[in-house]
Image (tube, rainbow, N blue to C red; front, side):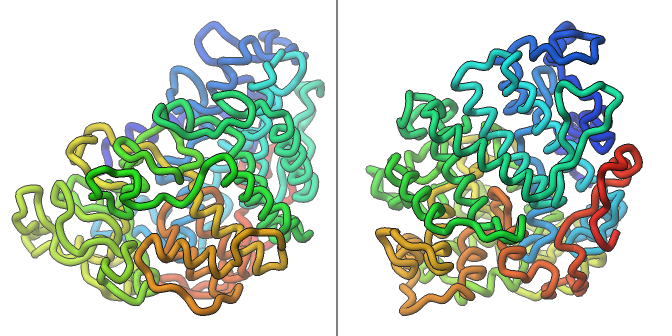
Length: 540
């Protein structure tokens, strides 16, 4: 398998998972940031005295640098979160091609809904998000002396991890910092955990301490590495809207649709909007996919990005002769939802041929080309053609099977293939927020300036798609699939399917299992074995 560079980058997360064994469930985790610093403040003591350095602790909640922290606020790899929210859903799969991407079936069982309580990526997600809850809780303790800005950001980050744990597992182990170290963490119900998350977000948003440029200032601008990669006001509003939109499937109690609308209105009031393609480009040569070209585009859309390049989203889709790893594909059924392969009719399908550096953006299909324009072949010298054909097997495939989805443009100015400086990873953008507002309106919310139909048509118009004449709630999953396919945004495609009741009840390409117990992931076996306060989810 040609995944060596990826495996090197992922090795850090694997080591963290092995060290934390948080199924052993946050019991003794005392994160440190260098060889001499213990965040407990009292190394070797069961008593928590506050973290030694609040700024370093906050950095650890963001960073992906193994020498500087745990890297637990990351979603850029293809494992843990991306695997659970996209590969297990109806937009993305990972095909085994001979010996490539077999990985002992770890990808196949996700897409086929046949995973068990020992699945590696389930364990990694459990570890990462539990570590995030604990570390944020330690930082929020008054004994850690966090500044108001550190407090607000830690509240947003803890809410993010609580939301993820409830979405995946339906329960959250939670450690009292003053409890004896031998005492096992108690377990918050979904309702208790989401109440804590919502309280954190309410406090952070009300505090006015979330903007990198002062209270209330928009978190966008030319200095993107500062303005978009911190948990600011806009992202906090986005997360609160996401929680309310999904609260019924998370806890059984309906969320506040008026609050969803109000929060998206507040994001818009900060200056975020749908990017007007070409409107901010003096040369007029922007395409739809320049939304993701952060290095050279000044779009008004990106609410939150992870300060790490997004080349995984390119490499895992493309063939080795294009510099990639050739496992991930998008569902042909999703591509066909667009009803066209003509980018003049729907810009989101992308070009069928070369765009830049030999690759196009959007749905990668047809004959693939090298940077010099020559036709590429696969490793068996067959023409490298990605065909619009329904996929039938996760296990038996050639190197050409499957359409690919690439949203981050390959530009020689930003590195090109096979390396170089790629764009940061877009985790929340205004289009997603606008579609939340539209759906909230269809679910009974009121007060939006645009009707749900007008909101959806604005998104379609930006992609040169003809407007709809009417709109129902049942149409929203397909609308979201066309716009957000493969992005791995907060909650991902799985949460859309959970919200509309299709994640376990429906079948799709290469997925035939319909088991309602798959709505939640299992608590990892190691966690159940070491914390009897946890209750395994039904069906496992």
